Image (cartoon, rainbow, N blue to C red):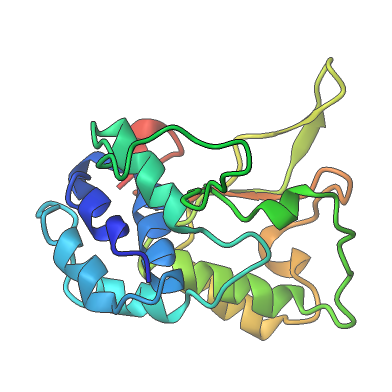
Length: 212
């Protein structure tokens, strides 16, 4: 358990973070072995957006993934808010000295060209349900895009997409048609994929002003 992460956390105002950065802090704390009340107590400072019980519900969905959010993410956010780690044992390094304190934003082994192993079984509907349950409350509107177009630079870019359904409605639809997610999100280009916006929307549009 990294004790310095709590010092860094004290320097971050949760009200200054967007929704995804707030989630990342929770994921990092859980990965480091901290209890949920640490994230919840810190989140209370954002009085405008804090909802009792929300942290506990999100926490239950943080079950790890291929590229886990580590303590380094919290240190990065803290530095952006002016935090500076305390200097410890400052001295010259010998040629054979080891640098043991090395915070990383992500785990380095995922940058070393390791071959990704395709899962033996795919369950897109359940994976999408888990994703939606982790990021959104049931009554929050979700912005998603299944249509794309080919830009001049060769990249696929998303269209405006949809924002009229809540996470609960999408999950209900996925459970009704678990064998084909296109029944829920529409047909998409398999080369381009589809997109889901991290932040919940008000159901009236997908601009910054519509983020709740």
